[in-house]
Length: 442
Ligand SMILES: *Cc1c(COP(=O)(O)O)cnc(C)c1O
Ligand SMILES: [Zn+2]
Image 1 (cartoon, rainbow, N blue to C red):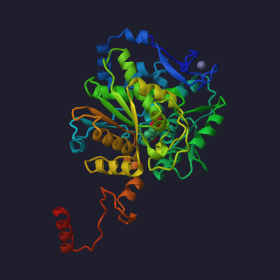
Image 2 (image 1 turned 90 degrees about the vertical axis):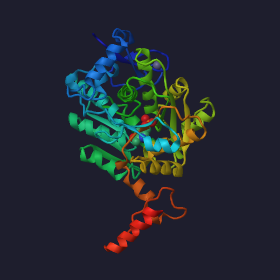
Image 3 (image 1 turned 135 degrees about the horizontal axis):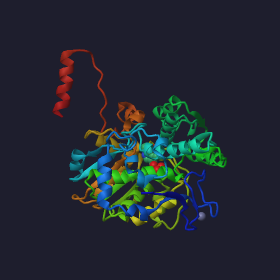
Image 4 (image 1 turned 45 degrees about the horizontal axis):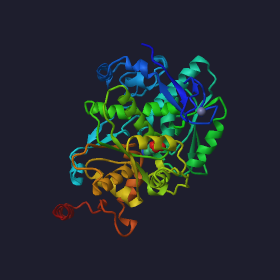
């Protein structure tokens, strides 16, 4: 069976372009491009045949189909030859049953999709494998791309650098100086990318990289490029597959540039079109209060949207004031009867720390989503019997300063709610026993 996909203008003018073109916006109307699939060809397989195929491949060893992304290749990007695929066995991440945390909130069916347990530590790997594989194919066929590049809040750059170096393609990374963690900064450096640290914020880096993208020999890897979205949409497919093809009631996802929430929606809509599922979940997009342009738009019923200057937040990966995918995100939220909510710095840090007490180790962005979860439970928007998935976007191990600062006794009054500071004492048996006694008894 021959499957096909192409770029198509998302603003309704219906211009199409091959996926091998170096193009990000419609030449007619400047609209964003999205990847469209030949759905009729895909429908020739029944939904049960698709499910069987996906089950046969999932997390097995036949390269590249064991990957959570390439196991769904026909639905993601059928146009890439297997020989050109650069895969690091992305996807297949744990769906963590948050039994204890859920019980504290009165929920019996709460799950955390651990997208950060991945090669470079965030969900960005899912999209980057598709994009870099396409670039690899273009280079192998015509050879005139000199480098891939991106602006990043720290995770896109890590993913791009890893996949590009595996492919042997030069990578150029634009980062806002001092606004990513040490762990995120060292990833592209270690992978040999040209790493440029700019005196600006993410939105400032994005402006420059978009100008560089005017050149045909530099390939833009930001999520304005819909190939990334195609890989990321496998998050929804994987969640449903992990529940034996059942659809949850709510999904809560942190949003910055808003590509991921759009990808989440696309994955569900595609499964719906193919009859793999017969209903849609509701989606909640969670923003940091200090970088909340979508939340503000939601307050107007999405009738208005204005870019803002994002304030500094611990949730650095979503410190974005001018999200490139805002229109597709709004379309998604409308379709999924979605909501947008926000979390303050204290709320996001407390929520992350509280969940950590039940066995997790959350990044601040996941903290934003967990804080929104708590609010939705409090106002009974989420009911005790609802099946809820929180998308954890990165591993907490990339954000140690966030945790160290939280558990630092010296940070002033009032102390954080879930503070657990280490106790320094002499190597003395009686002293140690006394401290243990004091803490176990309280
Ligand atoms: C990129 C990223 C996000 C936000 O995803 P968008 O597609 O920009 O909305 C959230 N959390 C982490 C850890 C990220 O790296
Ligand atoms: Zn157009």
